[in-house]
Image 1 (cartoon, one colour):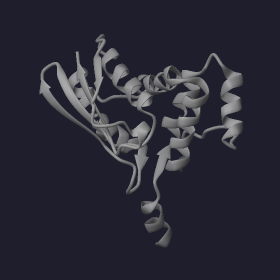
Image 2: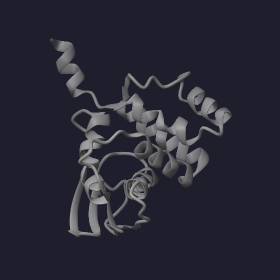
Image 3: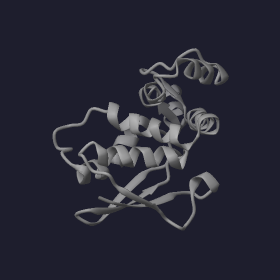
Length: 175
């Protein structure tokens, strides 16, 4: 019984979501192997759960070594690889479900959230307190819109950025 309570207190990240970096960097097997070796693992098990802080630091290492475009590509891969129920049938529905999607891939008391509030039929404010690179979040938002043939305008709020220590990133998304 203590194991279950202890597990509920741990912050963890899904191996299935972590493997998105392998898909995003599929053309660079040598780079993937080096990133994994530097992180002290041979592979990511999509069925396993990993320490959340380790996962976040892994995403930051990818960004530091390969750049913001590479980590945005990882975010896009997360959305592209996900399976969606039929009721997720457009940009608005997918953006509204990002918080639920995140909760399926991260668990624990201090993993953060993704909240979405719509301004109108073609714009939303996304408040993302999930730790990790801002560029990863931008890639996720871009792919959510691209899935339905839309190129979004994503404006980062002026209240701060998680990359600089702020507790959240606010994005205004128009499509």
